[in-house]
Image (cartoon, rainbow, N blue to C red):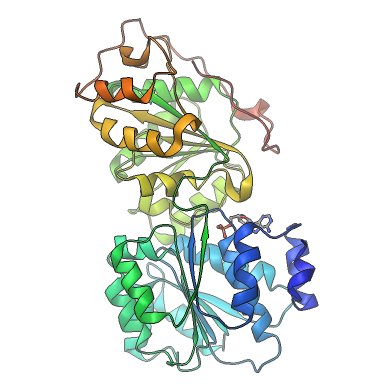
Length: 426
Ligand code: AMP
């Protein structure tokens, strides 16, 4: 089925064509028709499924015929990056329309935002904190909002934004269309959905399992060996664009510094950076000036870089959901990607859960002299075997002498192809 079937306005179809979308993704197939009918919708969909266009296209279409000059759609997201990314999708898909849109989030001058809001826009992509600030200052008029979208609702909950969201909703007309998207459904999000959505259509895409187009590889390793292992993998694996996750801001910063010293083109993205610095980092990563980005979870939410070939969890995420979101950064829109995770003895609990979810998709890998002995007997260790290992809180030290990784540049990697598969680092 093509996008023609949705009977979208010709100008919007032009935007779709210009982005190169050939056919709708499953969530677009399921969500676009009911949203176009004006139904409320609860979408259980993980990142990377094409959910942004699933709500942006019907919004653009709805506003083609009616008057301009008021804020008519409000999209609320947990992070600035996601807000920016959504704004970008609106601008790209709606480039042939006259609709105006802007983003509203903290960390940048409020006065510029006030000026842009005065200039009459129809669609706002916002983060809750700054939006509330505008509401309290009386610098935004939400009384004409017809469509409210709550995107990544589970992460708004994780970040403590749900009370703000409830406050914001009080400033919107009661008669409106509400769409809520979430990768998981914690009780608080379900309750919010029940309070805000009226007779919603429920759709579920691929439930909460991590994107299945991604190959998952776990490396058992001791904490102190992680950087050497990472360098070894970077040196020996064909990679296009790599996103490395650390648990803390300081670790993101220092790891990026170490990789930089080893000759890699690397940038870090973490919460201590100004909005301008974050944007510069993301732009540089997007356009290929940096091949590696070392980021923390919060900073990386909403990153949409289509060419990420590898996500490397230098530190294990804290939950299976966080794993899903990190891995959602690669393998976007059914492309393939690889996810490597460094697993220390302390991470084994979550490693078992992920093994249960991913099954054969997840394989343990060893690198001589760098990974722990624990899995050296077989990289295809059965889940039951791994379970018994869990009792050991730490891995044994690697027995072999560490090899000095050779310098490798990305110059020869085929940067334009997603089909480049990684070579085994083992
Ligand atoms: P999202 O889940 O909205 O973050 O989208 C993930 C990625 O898929 C983005 O880079 C989109 O531009 C891309 N995308 C969305 N819809 C389609 C489509 N129908 N065909 C190809 N790519 C798409």
